[in-house]
Image (cartoon, rainbow, N blue to C red; front, side, top):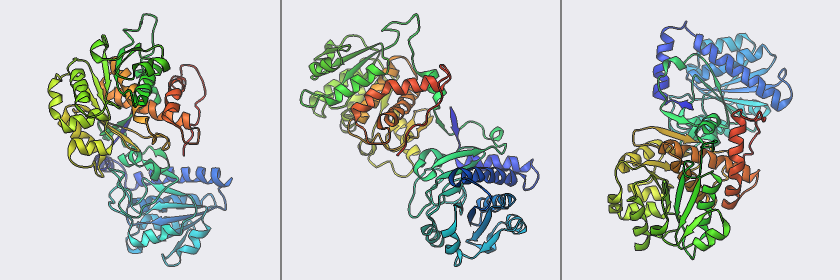
Length: 493
């Protein structure tokens, strides 16, 4: 599981490392790593390194110093390097001297457009992890001239390092080279960061436990319940689905099919769309009433059940069954409007809530805001539930403060019915006995993998997502090393 640390924690760790490291050593490590990745990026993009043109946009902090030192290293490989100093009086003195000694050019902001226009790559060294807020007007004006791909130093300038939020002009990078450890911005603002590479500067031993987590494919392979020789349909997990209606059966079909493909041992459907569900998924045991559903080990409830009295009674009944529940869509609205339904729940029984921003506002009385990690944590604490806050990046918070972030491959999941597919995945994992926080995080990760596979570079549908789940799970197993199959590159938009 990949760890992610807040900028406050990063700065504390850097302070400890600075105290036992020769002066300037950490910056040289970082800048040499930056230069190495810049050279590789140039070679990949232009077919060579020598003679290529790099422009450094240099601010007053350490990121500007990293950029200047990297420029000096690139000069040794015959790269034409031009530095634009946004605040000449505050430029990193030793880095600037090193660049000049190596033959780099230094120009004013006023003279920079002609050099920016000719650049093969532009390096964003404007602000570092201490920077907050949008780009200042002079930097924003420079960025308007950039046509070449941008490589960001540590993070794209103008993007909040801890929330990934933007509030004005900002940099969109093709590649971000970060140092020491991943920061929240790298998980929460993938569209601004582009590809991300990490340069190890020896910081990890000083960091302690991560603030956020991100599951990797090897984690999914370990977590996902795969039937063994001694398993049967009950040990693999029986999940109940209460979703859809006679008029709108789609949510029931999608959530139920998702649970089937997620390798649930058995799927039981209970609701007015039983005939439609049975016709699409004959392996599902379907009944018209939740009182006739039979024994299950977890429930999915909410998509398409309506928010009237009938939906409330369905939710109240399910919450009182003493098994883990994934409550989505209409169920979250019912909880917001009639919080007394939660009285039916044993406080120790796991509950997963999966709101989008609008449903979150109903639950909490305000929109999530810029700090989505804090928003998810607040809701998890209020409802004593795992809260999966949907969005381009999904944030999963547990009541005990654990947070996972799922960074998707593209925006293919922004389609009607996508959330119904996600609930089926989570419900099947709850039925298999996974920790609810891990179940929600793993479900979100496979959901995004399925979205990328189903899309294959073009928009897809929720039905396509369901059909792609087996392929996503095979990818998980294969890339974890079980079959020796080569890792494939997933399509992105």
